[in-house]
Amino acid sequence: MAMITICLLLILFLSIAIGTPIAVSLGLTAVGYFMLKGQWPFLFLVAQRLFAGCNSFELIAIPLFVLSGDIMYNGAISKALVNLAKSLIGWARGNLAMTTTLGAMFFGAVSGSGPATASAIGAIVATPMEEEGYPKAYTSAVIAASAPLGSLIPPSILMVIYGAAAGTSIAKMLLAGVGPGILFGVLFLLYEMYVGRKYSYGTVTAFSISKVFKALREGIWALIAPLIILGGIYSGTFTPTEAAAVTVFYSLFVGMCINHTIKLKSLPDILLTSSITSGAVLFVLGTVAAFGYVLTREGIPQKLTMLLTSTIKTPLVFLLVVQVILLVVGMLMNGSAAIMILTPLLLPAVLRYGIDPVYFGGLMVANLCVGMYTPPVAVTSFVSARVTGATFDETNKALMPLLLISVLAILILIFVPKIISYLPNALWR
Image 1 (spheres, helix red, strand yellow):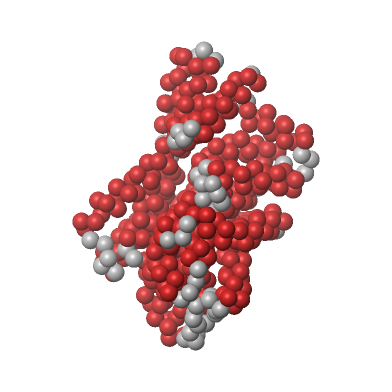
Image 2 (tube, rainbow, N blue to C red):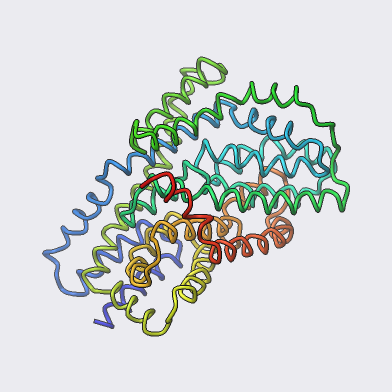
C-alpha cells in the first residue's frame, strides 16, 4: 500500500515537473492508480468521477463570475474605480501607489480574479506612475502585490473552489475573504504611504469633497455590483450561483446601456475568453474529483491525518506548519489547483484538530494569494512586469518588502482568527 502511494506521488510530481498541465497530471495519476492495482475494468470510474466533479449547481458560479469580471473589464469599469480611489487619497504623498492598491480592492469586488485585476488596474496606472517619477520596478511590484486582493474580496473564485472542495457554505466562504482582503490592503497602503513620503514620489492634490462625489457618481454602477451579490445572497433573495447570474446581466446592462463601452459585436470575443478560462478551471475540478477518489480509496488522507496528529500536538503548530507548506506550494502552482489538491488531504486533519473549515479556507486562500506574486510562478508579477515594462527580476527585488508584509499578515490571521471568521459567523448562520 505504501508503494502504491509513492508511485502515485511520483506520477503526479513528475508530470508537473515536465510541464504537463495540472489537470492532465491529476487525471494521469488517477488512471495510473487503477493500472498499478491491475484493476483495468474500473478505469470507467475516472471518467465517472471527472463528470461528477463538474456536475454541481454551485460550481456554475465559477464561469458566471469569470464572465461578469470579463464584461466589467471590457466595459472600462476599472477606470472609474481607479478615479474614485484617486479622489479619496490624492492628498497623500505616493498616492498613485495607494490608488493602485485601493483600486485593486474595488475591482476585486467585481472581478474575483488576481491576474484580471493586475491587467485591468495595471493598464490604467502604469503610465501615470511613470510620468510622476515612480520607478518601473516599484510600480510593477505594487501592481503585482495588490492584484491578488481581487481573489480575496468577494466575489472570490478561489473561495468558491474551496467551498466546493471542502463541502462548506460558499456564502460563508465569500464572507471569509473580506477581513483578510482589508488587512492586506491596509498594510500595503501604510507601506506605500511610507515609501511615498521617504522618496517624495508623485504629486499631491488637495482633498475635495466635490471630486469625491463626482468620482463616486461615475463609479457608482460598478460599486453596486458587489452590493447585488452580497446583499442578494445574505438577504436570502438568491443563492451564490443565482447571484453570479444576476451579476452577468447587470454587467451587460452597465457596459451596453449605461457606459456604452460594450458593443454587440464584441460579445463573442468576451464569451470566448471567459469560456477558455472557465473550461480550464472546471476541467481541473473534474480531474481533482477523480484524484480525490483515488486518495480516499487508498486511505491517504486518513494516513496523513494520523501522521500529523501523532507528531503535532496543538492546532496552532499545525496551522504554522501548514502555512509554510502552502507558501511553498503557492510558489509552484496555480492557487485553484493547489486548493483542489490539498483540501481533500488536509481537511480530515483540520477537523480532527477542531479548526473551523471556513476559517481554514480563508487562511488557505490568503496564503495562496501571496503565491501569485512569489517566484518562480508569480503570475501577477509576470502580468505587471509586462504592463509596466519592468523586468521580472526587477519586479521580484522590489517585491521583497511587500512579501515580508504579506507574511506578517498571514501571522496576524493565525493569531487573530476573528479577522476571518467574524463576518461568516455574524452574518450567515
